[in-house]
Length: 419
Image (cartoon, rainbow, N blue to C red; front, side, top):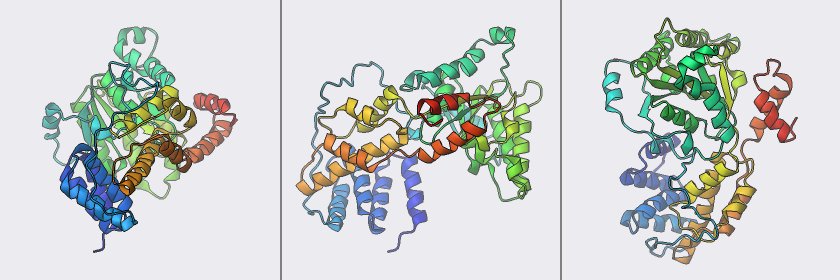
């Protein structure tokens, strides 16, 4: 049976959206095995066995996949509870667990009946993700400078409008989060929505663009109308450069130019129609965003979200090791060895170490916890992924910062001796 890449991609997206659906994950694992990808199939079955030890179908699948890899096909034992050995690291010292900015977003999205009722008033808008966030910036590990900047530039003026007005601080406009990929910009945006006790409405390019003339502009208008109806609301544009890119680069696409024009008009608003609507955006490449979107009253405040610092790396590593069998983990060594890794890179390191321990367990016929040997081997395999972004950022900081809007970036690159 030939399994198409499109089918696997669709199943992967479905599993991400419904992580607790065992039948769906098992079907995905079966299709991966049929496509000749036994290691990935074992990983998916392993997730099921972690939650449901001894699951017969998952156990059988692991046996078949292991046979395909040349490992012994002895019955896979149910994972035995393993007491974590964390050395001197006390992971329970905080009453409230810090969340990782790199957990899949489905872990923090919640239903909201009021929002769903309001959505029914719109007949033909694009699909969007709407949630009511409960997390705040206190739930974001590390990134203290980012949180300080967000508070000063955005949150405190919103909380104290009369004082802000006395100092000439405008409450109009939006906030643009930028930085390397995989560093938690979307998670920070969700935390801002939680700080404002607002609906969080996430929009991507697929929600806007349409093949029919004029429909993309209509979609942009409908997105803003829905957000206004849900106010107070945070309207979040992920990868805003995809829908708000430079119009000078779209000379052969009048449709994209019109989309940017529509976005500009919606952000300007008329009178008080945008009251209670806070517009956030994230991008890896702010230098590709149309300059008109960065003018006062639009995305006139920019915050650089850098790779996680030491406290953030510690929080992220804790999250992605938790729930897996582990022993003898030296967290301080891992934190020190991962300077320059994005949050997504850290997640990859933990997953890779888990794969190595899992395959060793299958070969031995019993569960062997993840240890530092696995993690050091994973670090040798997984390198920081932000190198190309750093080079692009360096060119912009060196030659494209006449206005001073990338001063934070200049400071960061100077500290890394790249300028």
